[in-house]
Length: 215
Image 1 (tube, rainbow, N blue to C red):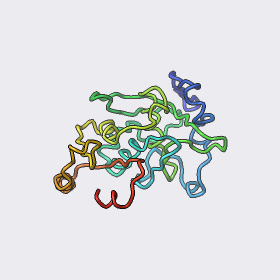
Image 2: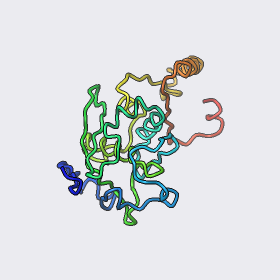
Image 3: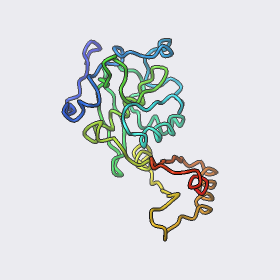
Image 4: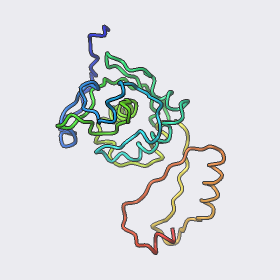
């Protein structure tokens, strides 16, 4: 493929499924970037940091939080992002773990944008493309961006690491099954000492100060 050609993904997302989420798609060089990003050139990576990643208009914080965790761990991030350099042709390969099996997903670089031509979904600062591309690969794997709306952090970690994960609930809907918070805290301290990746998921339930203090 010549540099003048542009790779186009043969799998096109159902417009009816996503028409209410974004307007259209553009290539990275056509996207309107923030003023802070103008000083940078387009790249897949530019010294990635967890604070570089911003969630967009999609309820996939379960995945974005996991992606932020591995942003500073090259041995994991670079295993996921197979194409590590900006590709003018627009072809990128991403490796994701789906139900325990690693799969290589090939995508183009057409990214969903708003009417103002700014990115709709997850983006990285400094004109880095890795977060947007990995999210797009996951959307392709599951059929659409809309399919990523809501999930569990454990799913995000397993998708990016391929490793088994353990979940601890800080409260239960069953009053007879109260979690042992001392045991959970001890596990957290132990896991941190071993260098395990950890993230958390909060509930959108309304709780008063008394309940918060008990937790």
